[in-house]
Length: 379
Image 1 (cartoon, rainbow, N blue to C red):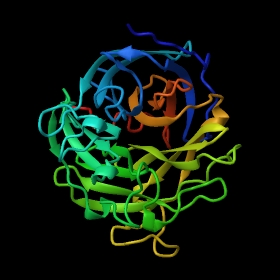
Image 2: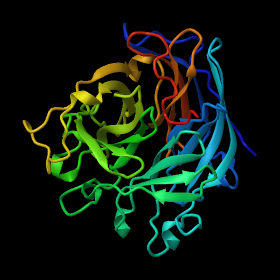
Image 3: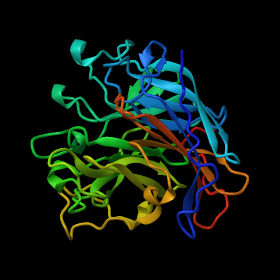
Image 4: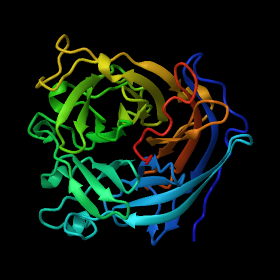
């Protein structure tokens, strides 16, 4: 019923990516395209989070109810870092339900007043009985980005209202298929950071190989009320390499964020260039060091300053070719120090791609175990 293709691409841990804080690859594995689970193709994985009580991971698919229902999966990752081996085991699937108690309908049978979600990120709330999840929106039908809370079984609990600036309009607001891509939950479980993948329309163009483009907005909100608490402008890099073909994408954007303690975020930048493939870099920022941009209708040079970026790892130098990395979560503290960091890719239901898992050891500044597990799942 389930065919897992496993790849132990890291027979021993890779070198550290940096002399102080950094990353090294412990093991990789993948699930082959076309794998079936629960009557639907497995794939489109865009977010991941761990329940530290059980050790299981929650995965969310960005399938817009085309290949199956809007859904989340449960997964165990069997890891043997000494041998450089990882084995993912899917253990369950749950449909995400709309406010009317029914599974979200596909676009071809969309229900009036109910969006067709494009799910991108997921985080357990404290106690791991409820989780936050995001949708980039259903722009064609008038729905902007969405932030929702669901019960562990996928039932809808509530929608968290987002600020009016998140509503797309002519020439302003989030870009279609470039909006609410990243989600981080502060250790207290009360503050969520929402990351755009690409710049808002009024802020400037996305990155290309020739230029880094405009900044993207990260917004901290109160989980209980949806009240915006702070917003910073994060500056992505230029795309890592030009496309080989005259047409097709050449871009770089933010595909995920993760809380690294109360004031820091790990930021995953994922780039793609036609004919060359994917690349990724991981950065660390201090959210207190960027100016608050909530009151700025448009970001312009001189009216804000982004937080400084500390490079944690450029995956190109770690010896592991990366796929379309979109999800990132903490695992447990590791016996040798540092934290287990798990990354997962979105295969886009493309036979030429696969769902890739990367298990890495993250060494926080100052050493020790840092803030492993600050994604909200702990009791």
